Amino acid sequence: MDAKNWDLELAAKAIKPNTVFTKSKHWVFAFESYVFQLMFNGFNHFNFFLPEEEPTKQPSKHRCFANFMRLQTMTTTQVYSENPGCPFAKFCKTKYLKVVHPKMECSLFGNLDQRKAISSGAFPRTEFFSLFAEMARRVWLLHCLAFSFDPPAVAFQVRKGCRFSEVYMESVAAGEDDAVTGDFTAAFTVVPGFKIGKTVVQSQVYLSPPVVQRSC
Image 1 (cartoon, rainbow, N blue to C red):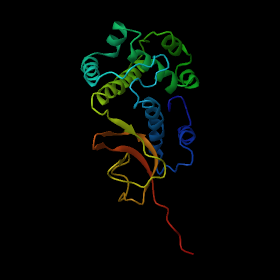
Image 2 (cartoon, rainbow, N blue to C red):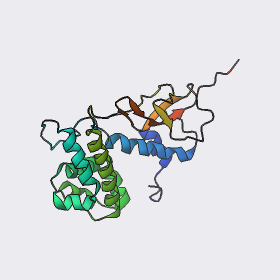
Image 3 (tube, rainbow, N blue to C red):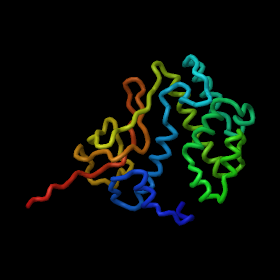
Image 4 (tube, helix red, strand yellow):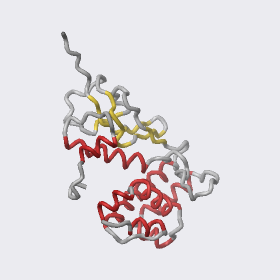
């Protein structure tokens, strides 16, 4: 994006309006949040609400774990080659078409060839799509693992404006924030957190510093 002379500050503020970024290098968190939000949308439903998947009974935790173990040893290319119409392939296709906007793809590559290929069910042999598909495979694996628990693990996001809590949140700028306390609030969620029974995996959030009250 930087190489294509995108205005990264403008793009970041369009994704996360009314957010004060304390450093220019923090703009990347807006883009990461955008990707993670779309990739994990539907995570808590057993079929990810895939539009092409017929609603069926939730699979058993044993089947979910078996799928996790099987897919863990396979590459995305192998999965596509074995069954181009499998749920993971549909997931990867659906998420790509949502995450990568046509204007973005055209700006990055000068055409929409990848989009057309993916829409037809093909697996483009490009570095960009291979990296995207690998990201999708890891999210899908996490989803399979989540539904291996009884009850299933659930993903959660922190609402904007929530006061910082070490129980549920971790700052993505950890080490840069000065004495993060409950006075800080969440500007937006970057990476969702997870609840596995009574265990909490913290959500990674971008924090807004406390408002300093000026005396007259």
